[in-house]
Image 1 (cartoon, rainbow, N blue to C red):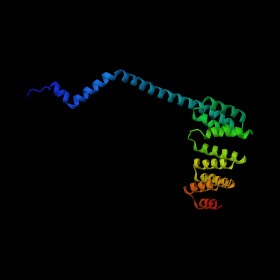
Image 2 (cartoon, rainbow, N blue to C red):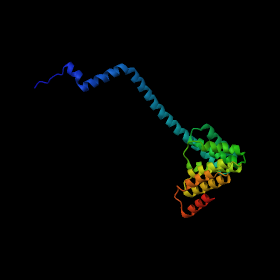
Image 3 (tube, rainbow, N blue to C red):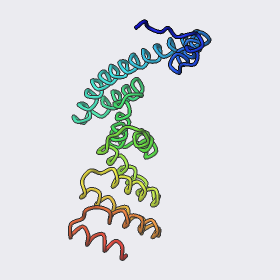
Image 4 (cartoon, rainbow, N blue to C red):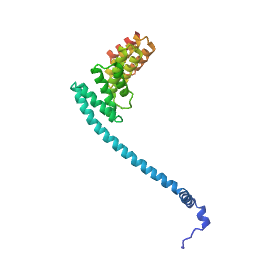
Length: 220
């Protein structure tokens, strides 16, 4: 049977050919724009991979310098450690190690008897960063809390001990820092804050001894 050829009218009315016609018209009309968008997309993807490679390289280099600084710190060579941590914090400030350097700058400042505002500046720079390092965040907030407590700012101290509790990994640390926060709030006559701490502690899986400590705190 001879094949039937579709007329121009039938082609125009056929949904498939009609859609193809629309697409051809769209590309003819917007060809330059689509090419430009394609070039932008290629450049964006290329920039992403180049940037990621650069970040990874900087992280590796910063990790090496950080290791040297940490070695000096562990040997109690605080001046040498401070110089090296400053270098990492300034030259590689956008890396995780550059952010961690501020935590250790706080520790070296404290070890060398620096003023509290200098210690706090470094610890708060680290604590306020977006780096995910729960153990160091716990330590930073605990130290910030202790400095504020020493200076009589009880509410800020309690706030930081509570943050330390929430960053802590183990339940024992969470309970310890949480109860410390509650006691400090009570000392500052902030019973509502104490109640918030108790409510938080009761969300944890507590053993009998820990439950007893939380109950004692709630009844004070």
